[in-house]
Image (cartoon, rainbow, N blue to C red):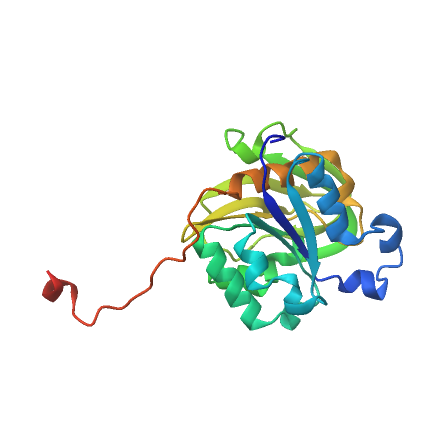
Length: 249
Protein backbone atom coordinates (compact mmCIF):
# COMPACT_ATOMS: atom_id res chain seq x y z
CA UNK A 1 0.00 0.00 0.00
CA UNK A 2 2.89 2.35 0.63
CA UNK A 3 3.53 2.96 -3.08
CA UNK A 4 -0.12 3.68 -3.85
CA UNK A 5 -0.72 7.39 -4.41
CA UNK A 6 -4.32 8.33 -3.83
CA UNK A 7 -6.43 11.36 -3.07
CA UNK A 8 -8.39 10.51 0.06
CA UNK A 9 -10.97 12.61 1.90
CA UNK A 10 -12.05 11.70 5.45
CA UNK A 11 -15.48 13.19 6.18
CA UNK A 12 -16.89 13.54 9.68
CA UNK A 13 -19.95 15.51 10.75
CA UNK A 14 -17.89 16.86 13.67
CA UNK A 15 -20.89 17.52 15.90
CA UNK A 16 -19.74 15.47 18.90
CA UNK A 17 -16.42 17.31 18.90
CA UNK A 18 -18.13 20.71 18.68
CA UNK A 19 -20.41 19.88 21.62
CA UNK A 20 -17.67 18.08 23.57
CA UNK A 21 -20.00 15.09 23.89
CA UNK A 22 -18.83 12.85 25.43
CA UNK A 23 -16.58 14.99 27.62
CA UNK A 24 -13.67 12.65 26.91
CA UNK A 25 -13.81 13.01 23.14
CA UNK A 26 -11.28 15.86 23.13
CA UNK A 27 -8.79 13.70 25.01
CA UNK A 28 -9.36 10.66 22.81
CA UNK A 29 -9.47 12.57 19.53
CA UNK A 30 -7.84 16.00 19.90
CA UNK A 31 -7.92 16.43 16.13
CA UNK A 32 -11.43 15.02 15.86
CA UNK A 33 -12.50 11.55 14.80
CA UNK A 34 -11.67 12.51 11.21
CA UNK A 35 -8.19 13.58 12.29
CA UNK A 36 -7.53 10.24 13.97
CA UNK A 37 -8.73 8.27 10.96
CA UNK A 38 -6.63 10.42 8.62
CA UNK A 39 -3.56 10.01 10.84
CA UNK A 40 -3.95 6.26 10.79
CA UNK A 41 -4.19 6.24 7.00
CA UNK A 42 -1.05 8.33 6.59
CA UNK A 43 0.96 5.49 8.09
CA UNK A 44 -0.17 3.26 5.23
CA UNK A 45 -0.30 5.86 2.44
CA UNK A 46 2.57 8.28 3.15
CA UNK A 47 2.71 9.50 -0.45
CA UNK A 48 -1.02 10.08 -0.78
CA UNK A 49 -2.95 13.31 -0.35
CA UNK A 50 -5.17 12.79 2.69
CA UNK A 51 -7.48 15.62 3.71
CA UNK A 52 -10.49 16.02 6.00
CA UNK A 53 -13.87 17.71 5.74
CA UNK A 54 -16.80 18.29 8.09
CA UNK A 55 -20.47 19.17 8.04
CA UNK A 56 -19.72 22.81 8.95
CA UNK A 57 -17.49 23.39 5.93
CA UNK A 58 -18.96 25.16 2.87
CA UNK A 59 -20.78 22.50 0.84
CA UNK A 60 -19.73 20.16 3.70
CA UNK A 61 -16.26 20.23 2.17
CA UNK A 62 -17.56 18.09 -0.71
CA UNK A 63 -17.75 20.43 -3.66
CA UNK A 64 -17.81 19.17 -7.22
CA UNK A 65 -14.17 20.17 -7.58
CA UNK A 66 -13.15 18.19 -4.47
CA UNK A 67 -15.09 15.06 -5.40
CA UNK A 68 -13.85 15.07 -8.98
CA UNK A 69 -10.30 14.67 -7.65
CA UNK A 70 -11.14 12.19 -4.87
CA UNK A 71 -10.28 8.50 -5.24
CA UNK A 72 -11.78 7.47 -1.89
CA UNK A 73 -14.23 9.18 0.46
CA UNK A 74 -14.54 7.94 4.05
CA UNK A 75 -17.75 8.84 5.90
CA UNK A 76 -18.41 9.05 9.65
CA UNK A 77 -21.74 10.43 10.85
CA UNK A 78 -24.03 9.91 13.81
CA UNK A 79 -26.44 12.59 15.05
CA UNK A 80 -26.62 15.00 12.12
CA UNK A 81 -27.56 12.80 9.15
CA UNK A 82 -30.57 14.97 8.33
CA UNK A 83 -28.43 18.10 8.27
CA UNK A 84 -26.48 16.85 5.29
CA UNK A 85 -27.60 18.66 2.15
CA UNK A 86 -29.53 16.55 -0.34
CA UNK A 87 -27.65 18.34 -3.10
CA UNK A 88 -24.34 17.15 -1.66
CA UNK A 89 -25.68 13.63 -1.21
CA UNK A 90 -26.75 13.50 -4.86
CA UNK A 91 -23.31 14.77 -5.85
CA UNK A 92 -21.54 12.10 -3.81
CA UNK A 93 -23.86 9.42 -5.17
CA UNK A 94 -23.06 10.44 -8.74
CA UNK A 95 -19.35 10.17 -8.09
CA UNK A 96 -19.69 6.78 -6.39
CA UNK A 97 -21.68 5.48 -9.36
CA UNK A 98 -18.95 6.87 -11.57
CA UNK A 99 -16.18 5.00 -9.78
CA UNK A 100 -15.19 6.88 -6.61
CA UNK A 101 -14.59 4.56 -3.66
CA UNK A 102 -16.70 4.95 -0.50
CA UNK A 103 -15.84 3.67 2.99
CA UNK A 104 -18.71 4.08 5.48
CA UNK A 105 -17.85 3.80 9.16
CA UNK A 106 -19.85 2.95 12.29
CA UNK A 107 -23.10 4.94 12.57
CA UNK A 108 -22.67 6.10 9.00
CA UNK A 109 -24.99 3.16 8.28
CA UNK A 110 -27.83 5.68 8.69
CA UNK A 111 -26.19 8.32 6.49
CA UNK A 112 -28.29 9.55 3.60
CA UNK A 113 -25.65 8.51 1.10
CA UNK A 114 -25.50 4.93 2.44
CA UNK A 115 -29.26 4.34 2.62
CA UNK A 116 -29.71 5.88 -0.81
CA UNK A 117 -27.06 3.70 -2.43
CA UNK A 118 -28.30 0.54 -0.72
CA UNK A 119 -32.03 1.21 -1.02
CA UNK A 120 -32.95 -0.16 2.43
CA UNK A 121 -33.44 1.29 5.91
CA UNK A 122 -29.99 0.05 7.09
CA UNK A 123 -31.48 -0.14 10.58
CA UNK A 124 -30.05 -2.40 13.29
CA UNK A 125 -30.22 -3.24 16.99
CA UNK A 126 -27.88 -1.45 19.37
CA UNK A 127 -26.94 -1.11 23.00
CA UNK A 128 -24.18 1.08 24.40
CA UNK A 129 -22.81 -0.37 27.62
CA UNK A 130 -19.13 -0.47 26.75
CA UNK A 131 -19.01 -4.19 26.00
CA UNK A 132 -16.18 -6.16 24.50
CA UNK A 133 -16.42 -6.71 20.74
CA UNK A 134 -14.67 -9.51 18.88
CA UNK A 135 -14.29 -8.93 15.13
CA UNK A 136 -13.98 -12.30 13.39
CA UNK A 137 -12.64 -12.69 9.86
CA UNK A 138 -14.97 -14.92 7.83
CA UNK A 139 -13.48 -14.31 4.37
CA UNK A 140 -9.70 -14.37 4.85
CA UNK A 141 -9.11 -14.52 1.08
CA UNK A 142 -10.48 -10.99 0.60
CA UNK A 143 -7.85 -8.20 0.23
CA UNK A 144 -9.49 -6.20 3.02
CA UNK A 145 -8.73 -9.09 5.42
CA UNK A 146 -5.04 -9.26 4.47
CA UNK A 147 -2.81 -9.21 7.56
CA UNK A 148 -5.74 -8.90 9.97
CA UNK A 149 -5.73 -10.98 13.14
CA UNK A 150 -8.88 -12.93 13.99
CA UNK A 151 -10.45 -11.94 16.17
CA UNK A 152 -9.67 -8.28 16.62
CA UNK A 153 -10.37 -7.58 20.29
CA UNK A 154 -12.03 -4.23 21.05
CA UNK A 155 -12.18 -3.86 24.85
CA UNK A 156 -15.12 -1.45 24.89
CA UNK A 157 -17.53 -0.66 22.11
CA UNK A 158 -21.19 0.01 21.34
CA UNK A 159 -23.08 -3.17 20.51
CA UNK A 160 -24.52 -3.41 17.01
CA UNK A 161 -26.73 -6.45 16.39
CA UNK A 162 -28.87 -8.14 13.80
CA UNK A 163 -31.12 -7.71 12.04
CA UNK A 164 -29.02 -5.32 9.97
CA UNK A 165 -31.41 -4.24 7.21
CA UNK A 166 -29.06 -4.17 4.23
CA UNK A 167 -29.21 -5.93 0.86
CA UNK A 168 -27.22 -9.13 0.44
CA UNK A 169 -23.62 -7.87 0.39
CA UNK A 170 -21.18 -8.74 -2.36
CA UNK A 171 -18.71 -9.86 0.30
CA UNK A 172 -19.15 -10.66 3.98
CA UNK A 173 -15.65 -10.22 5.42
CA UNK A 174 -16.11 -9.66 9.16
CA UNK A 175 -18.69 -10.76 11.74
CA UNK A 176 -18.62 -9.30 15.24
CA UNK A 177 -19.77 -10.93 18.47
CA UNK A 178 -20.56 -9.20 21.75
CA UNK A 179 -20.71 -10.04 25.43
CA UNK A 180 -24.51 -10.27 25.34
CA UNK A 181 -24.40 -12.97 22.66
CA UNK A 182 -25.35 -10.75 19.72
CA UNK A 183 -23.64 -11.04 16.35
CA UNK A 184 -23.36 -8.46 13.59
CA UNK A 185 -22.17 -8.34 9.97
CA UNK A 186 -19.53 -5.74 10.76
CA UNK A 187 -17.54 -5.71 7.50
CA UNK A 188 -19.34 -5.91 4.15
CA UNK A 189 -18.85 -4.72 0.59
CA UNK A 190 -21.16 -3.59 -2.19
CA UNK A 191 -20.80 -2.41 -5.76
CA UNK A 192 -22.97 0.33 -7.19
CA UNK A 193 -22.44 1.43 -10.79
CA UNK A 194 -18.68 1.57 -11.24
CA UNK A 195 -18.09 2.30 -7.56
CA UNK A 196 -17.04 0.07 -4.68
CA UNK A 197 -18.35 0.46 -1.12
CA UNK A 198 -16.98 -0.95 2.14
CA UNK A 199 -18.89 -0.68 5.41
CA UNK A 200 -17.05 -1.30 8.70
CA UNK A 201 -18.92 -0.88 11.97
CA UNK A 202 -16.43 -0.49 14.90
CA UNK A 203 -15.88 3.14 15.94
CA UNK A 204 -18.30 4.65 18.45
CA UNK A 205 -17.37 8.18 19.59
CA UNK A 206 -17.22 7.16 23.26
CA UNK A 207 -14.27 4.80 22.83
CA UNK A 208 -10.78 5.21 21.30
CA UNK A 209 -11.34 2.51 18.68
CA UNK A 210 -9.66 4.39 15.82
CA UNK A 211 -6.35 4.33 17.70
CA UNK A 212 -6.21 0.52 17.54
CA UNK A 213 -3.59 -0.63 15.03
CA UNK A 214 -5.68 -3.48 13.62
CA UNK A 215 -8.70 -1.23 13.13
CA UNK A 216 -6.49 1.26 11.29
CA UNK A 217 -5.21 -1.55 9.08
CA UNK A 218 -8.72 -2.75 8.22
CA UNK A 219 -9.68 0.78 7.20
CA UNK A 220 -6.48 1.17 5.17
CA UNK A 221 -7.12 -2.16 3.45
CA UNK A 222 -10.66 -1.00 2.73
CA UNK A 223 -9.39 2.22 1.18
CA UNK A 224 -7.01 0.27 -1.01
CA UNK A 225 -9.77 -2.06 -2.18
CA UNK A 226 -12.43 0.55 -3.00
CA UNK A 227 -9.91 2.84 -4.74
CA UNK A 228 -9.90 2.74 -8.53
CA UNK A 229 -7.64 5.65 -9.45
CA UNK A 230 -7.49 4.72 -13.13
CA UNK A 231 -11.23 4.47 -13.71
CA UNK A 232 -12.84 7.00 -16.05
CA UNK A 233 -15.25 8.91 -13.80
CA UNK A 234 -18.63 8.82 -15.45
CA UNK A 235 -21.92 7.77 -13.87
CA UNK A 236 -23.79 5.02 -15.75
CA UNK A 237 -26.55 6.24 -18.01
CA UNK A 238 -30.04 5.54 -16.69
CA UNK A 239 -32.80 5.43 -19.24
CA UNK A 240 -36.29 4.05 -19.75
CA UNK A 241 -36.78 3.22 -23.44
CA UNK A 242 -40.08 4.35 -24.89
CA UNK A 243 -40.54 1.06 -26.72
CA UNK A 244 -40.82 -2.36 -25.13
CA UNK A 245 -38.02 -4.90 -25.36
CA UNK A 246 -39.69 -6.96 -28.10
CA UNK A 247 -40.45 -3.86 -30.18
CA UNK A 248 -36.90 -2.63 -29.81
CA UNK A 249 -35.63 -5.89 -31.29
